[in-house]
Length: 65
Image 1 (cartoon, rainbow, N blue to C red):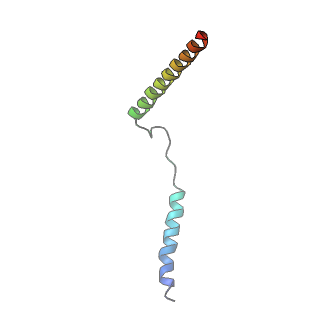
Image 2: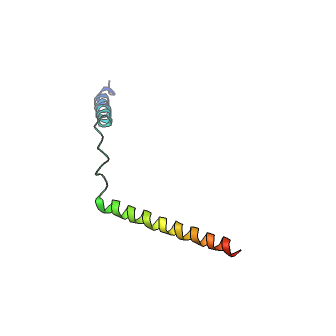
Image 3: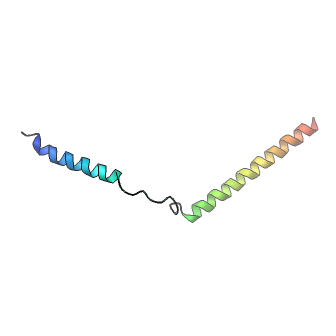
């Protein structure tokens, strides 16, 4: 029965792993730092400005033809 001594640690490991999977999930609010949120908002604004400028350039090209 030399394999029996390995059975208990394996069972304990399985128990711990299953309990970790059942822990309460954190509320996603407040997970991101405020500075990161502000940076993402600024990046979104810059992206919108670039898209607007590209749209205006395309309209200007269409009018020039």
